Image (tube, rainbow, N blue to C red; front, side, top):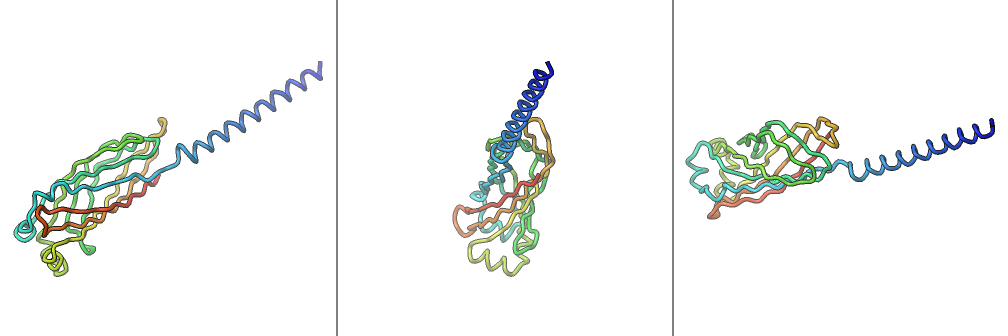
Length: 189
């Protein structure tokens, strides 16, 4: 009788150990593959530039232009962010801003956010280097933003931030005015 009980206890312990090892392997595999944090992809489309003219940079104090930010969330969790403001700089000096309204980016999805950039053209004109760039036909700007919010994976919510930096070149001597950009993003949880 005692021999049978010992055998049952050993079998139970071995089974529990095997299940614990398999569960650990599955969770570690998921953590390093499926649930691995991925930085989002961001593409900036300065769609409103075509409506501007070179004279706007010379005669206006402020210029407002529409832009579309295309964000691709490659994570297995949604990201709900708060209202934020992107700051636009030229040569390290603040020359504009872009208010970004709170929203949620679904898991493994892309979404477009339309926002309006306000450039202080008067501030640009006060910078001799900017005047030379405007006369030469292109203007290089940098936009930075920190989007604070919560990442939600399988009902678990964690605070996080997405840091973005976009470098834009506006070709203001071309008709219509056009722009190119490339962006860097970093997700921290």
